[in-house]
Amino acid sequence: MNHYETVFILNPVLSDVQIEETVKKFEDFLINNGAKMVAKENWGLKKLAYPIQNKKSGFYHLFEFTSTGEVVMPYEQEFRRDERVMRFLTVKLDKHAIAWAEKRRARNKNAKA
Image: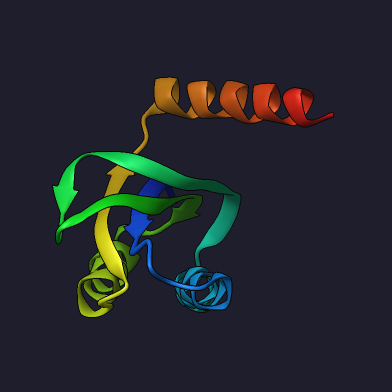
């Protein structure tokens, strides 16, 4: 099992319900294909560094999951098919990135407490 992280940006004109449906769709896709969700973060509405599809902001989400490599290609295909997704990036994490992600989650958990 490999450790992956996906960050995706959703269109800023979507309603809260549409955003939840989209996030749930991609989470369900991973779970139904045998992936295990490690972490899920909603980073909220953020300003983009440059316009994408004439939009200057977008809703950022992060998924961290473990899965086999065969799941990534169809997973990314789903992102390409969905017009609500403006950009996405999936990366395979090495041991150093996994340790950093665990520290980030712990820091975020302490900040919320």
